Length: 222
Image: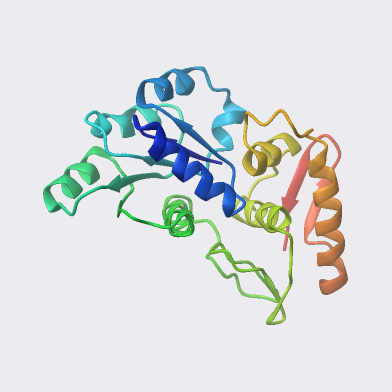
């Protein structure tokens, strides 16, 4: 899930729509509203955040410190104008990346993943081996051939690969893929997505690359 912060509702809504079109869950909040949400968000909610996208507002340089007290997800600032002074100030304040508008949400996702890899030493976009997983909108490949997956199955696979060093729960996957405020879909839908994804991977690879343990969750084991 990506969190967009901007006092201009039309800007936040525009990015929420853009993420939705690409199959990513997101949440748009005003700057004051965001602080309230951040203070009250549960650990599970914060764990589902894959990136913060900050619009252009006066108090933005103070936000990295506020966010880092609660969450380690990448922080990307949107720039309305090309300004070296502003860019340097944002990096000094703790922003992880600065992007000039207009920018496609797929670039934001790619930049966020790049920041996360630098921060955590997570797998590179295309890991060596029979199965290659990308984070730029492409389907994964098995032995060099594309494995066509529905968007949510692809995003689940990408999320598992990003977090391959730990086991993730069904709730964490649901919050990441569907968003923390989605009451229209039951959390159990993850089991259906996961069953189909594991079957497709098993048919192509001949073995399970996703380890599932009841009550404990899932882990990509390669």
